[in-house]
Image (cartoon, rainbow, N blue to C red; front, side, top):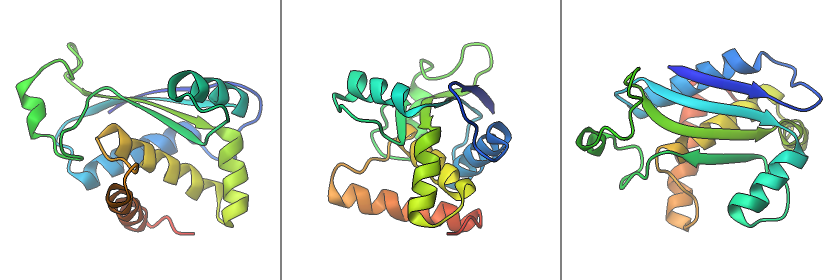
Length: 164
């Protein structure tokens, strides 16, 4: 797996962000049954920067915890068979599946970990899992979709033994 990792702004999370993110992304994709090696970009940023991105890309004028920018639209979440029909979603040199980009607010990780009474490690893992599920077609706009996505998030966190 290729992970393009970048961190901007002041402050750091109290964990090894890049290696832990790589582990969580790989474990999530393995759990889901992704049959391909994948490429993901992850940016850790500030509330100010994610606020600007949220306003620009989603029309929502406030900071958020995580943004996901999938490269492929999945007709069925987490089902990869349709990808064999096109090569557009694979890196031409590495052959890796181009999943997309994840942007996480470091400040929101810290705030939400404190608010929910769990570790920064757990919150960071949760946001990465949440975003990876978005990158492979899961969503939570409709109630049924939300229930499916939330159940999948819980399953993966339990499988990885990352508890509250």
